[in-house]
Amino acid sequence: MNLLSRTIARLWLALTLALAVLGAAGPAAADSQLSALAHIDPGSSAILANSEGTRITLGLSQPVPFRAYMLDDPRRLVVDFREVDFSGLTPEAMLATQGQGTMIRDLRWGRFRPGWSRMVAELSAPAAILTAVEDTGDDPHVEIRLVRSTPAAFAAKAGAPSSALWDLPQPAQTAAPHRRQDGGEPLRVVLDPGHGGIDPGAEIDGLQEKVLTLTFARELKEQMTRAGMSVTMTRTEDVFVPLEDRITIARNAGADLFIALHADILPEGQASGATIYQLDEKSEDEASRKLAERHDRDDLLAGVDLAGHDDGVAGVLMDLARTETQPRSVRLAQVLAGAIRGANLPMHRHPVQKADFSVLKAPDIPSVLVELGFLSSPDDRRRLLDDGWRRQMAGAITQGVLNWAKADAAEARLLRR
View 1 (cartoon, rainbow, N blue to C red):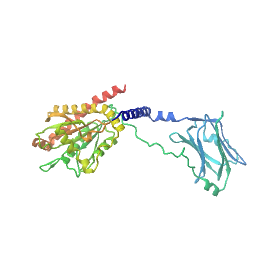
View 2: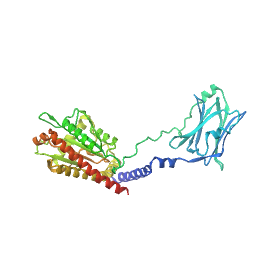
View 3: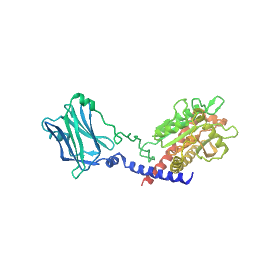
View 4: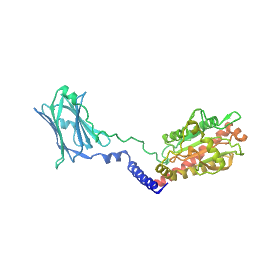
């Protein structure tokens, strides 16, 4: 990446962090920043009616952009403001000032979207806006004069006028960012049984990886749920789920961690025992490279190629996110390996390894891939079909996750201080 791209990325990151700081104060704080742009002045606000029509005066602490228009069915006057705090004034008090002959029978106001206020006056008869002006001097106020009209004339002019100021699309509502788990809520785990549907995964002697991983994931979910975790599975039946969708499922679930489950084949080696993989995009190990090719082949089946989708800025931002997430993934892999070893369950001679698996690339979710065993090993095949072994392995993984979560939460609480 050239110097210009890195500079743009750093500027974008600074903006992102600044927005995150503003958002961290929560909805109440955000509202307080937007609200009370102008305050209503009850003493200089009134509705006055006479034979010529009705005059609405709204005293303000400072000028604000506004617009006034009529809407039909029911007939009503609508006044939109760039936000006004009406505290201290009630519709009843305003209506009490109007006298005889007024065309206003009901009145209400409030905030109708972020940064904007609206006043609605229901009319007892057709009316037209004679004038709608704002005095921006020492005594700012809005004054609207209404005169009587006919039903046909009212209907012809009803409707909000087009305006670039008022009709711009509103910002999309987005969920608050998921904060790192600190033990205050149940741990949210996403289990990803490898392959599925049209992609059977490894196959040998009538066994299919997609079936074995799903069977184990169901048993692991049961044990984790009993331990107090909230568990989501990327698939609960024999269906095909593209790789990018698996990560999306995890993000939508607000996952605190992601565990992919596999049972592959390495025909050229004598691999045996469980193995924990963590992400290494620069892995040059031949066995890891071949496994990555096999794990990622369902992208090809789905016709989805994730390569090259990130521009330079997004790539830098994801790398920065991984500086916080990746060490947690490394600790998760180590703790899981220790728990499996502690349960006296067979492990590969190199129990923790690195590989470039696509399902481990979510930059904001600690992720590991667990090879439960290798179908190329007769011993592993026998263990994967054994109810007792699966129960023990699920228990070991569950305990390992609990151990990791406890230490991870303590670190999170310390960092927030």
